[in-house]
Image (cartoon, rainbow, N blue to C red; front, side, top):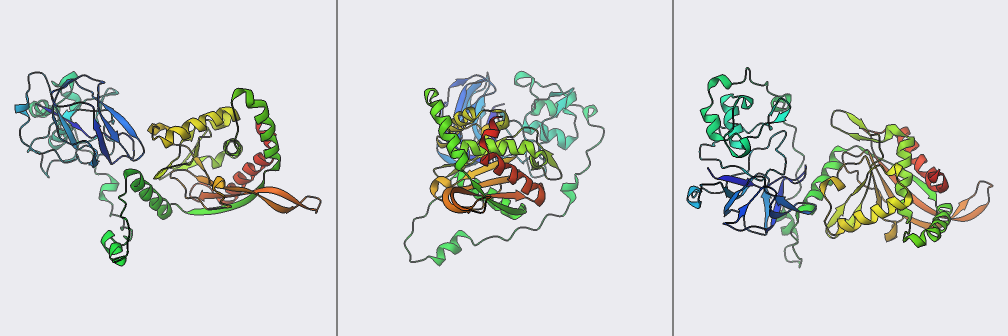
Length: 441
């Protein structure tokens, strides 16, 4: 039976993508590991590989198609002995029902559903395991097994590489049934949460500006994701804000000296490099603030994984510098430059911009004195950094002087970090920046 190649989930948050380019055509023979297509997610364009071998029988989705839902059939793969006549004229399958733990994104082929798949067929359960090893079964086989109460661990697969397919499940004897059905989850029986108030529709907004000249700009995947995540963050994360002024004169002098010594190595440290290091060390000095919100618990992190916002055309990335507390300023500088360059080219892999417990957003280079940043869940906090500006200050001796002052705002998730703890963290960041040589000790 021909198998369907489904739209993969190339990142944990991906729900749909654009089929940017086919790298195969109908009739091509492919093997495991061959590149099939380029898929554009909300963050990057990634290559999609085949898992099984066979012949491309039909391409179901045209190049450039946007908004293709994850698990939608995008092509049909023919195995040995099958031909295009076996495909039939059935339309492309609807996306499979979501599950608690979807199959990994690298799975390129799945068994073709048939008209037997109706509304009464339960959704495919998460990929099962047997003796700690994953059991490979097609989504249709898993759905039928769930409907009949069969234990996939007791069924031998006849598909490619021992995969369990529809015919194996249909031929299984009742003795392979599981001993009891799993109890319904509390989430399934709980009353649904009230929906958040919806904003005005696109048509309603357009009507307001009827007769006025404007250009309608379609949202790409990145902008849709940014809009959804920021709305979620402001609606669900209880933000509070702490502000401090930080004097930079000692740092600027120290930076100038270091850069002169590093000229021969082609390294030029930025103020942002010092800010990253200062935050990473502060998270170690105040370890209970190095934490993320995990729904029903707090995860207190051991390393300082610091995310840094990078503006790109149409949106932004937050690449993560892992173990930042252990890296030298020059290493952080080189890594940040590499991540920023690849972010602007949309060449970052998901693991490079996901994770971290803390973020930095620096708009000082744009002349912004101060601002409040929105927390990027599940982070516990984000530091908004303004420009260093010459200002009058009163010294410890009571004398008036001029200093370069940078205003920062720490946005904090109150579920994770309380006020006094946040103040301790911000003070540690300030101390590190105002005494930069201590960061090299």
